[in-house]
Length: 236
Image 1 (cartoon, rainbow, N blue to C red):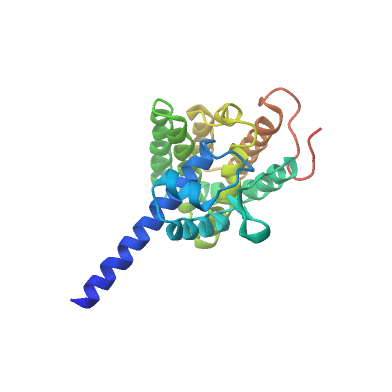
Image 2 (cartoon, helix red, strand yellow):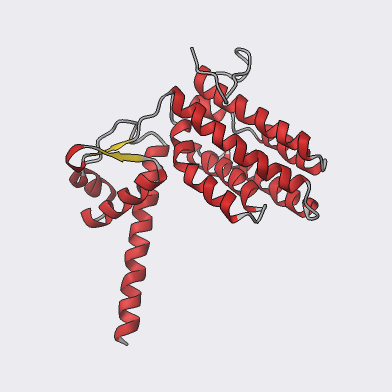
């Protein structure tokens, strides 16, 4: 009996912590807490209706995700990024997702994988009619699924470690820029490349997708200038 009560208590604690993580992550992703915002324990815990202890645990997890940073005397702020961070993030992201795409294009189960990816793109189209937050989450879910379907745990873990930085890139200069990258049509191109069974073509399509995404975040529009080289260029 005591063991069950203790287990139930631990489960409640984990649930509260996860709710806190989700709430703060949502506030950061939607711009309620913009980059550079000081996340004072008293203010944020009262605003979100959670205990300060639970908030501290949530902030530590969000630090590992790359969404918040700790400064002097434990001062916690929403992470700020610059142009170099975006280029570095998308250089690594492009490499990871290109490997995922190549793997799926060469897979015996390619048809089944593409069916799931097409369903994820349909979810993106539906999310666009719901909210900005839903659209962002659906976009990230597609790219995570791309990695998950490879059945390569190391690749998926690497992508997940990058997710916080991806979220900060999305918020870099406002959601309007980021949302231009989240259309269903642009993601159907990735699925079509995988469906073709051509790993080299799939690699190229995914890398082009990432270059265009980084360019939109940095310069405001996908086709406003020549594509950047995310392996070496810096924005001007």
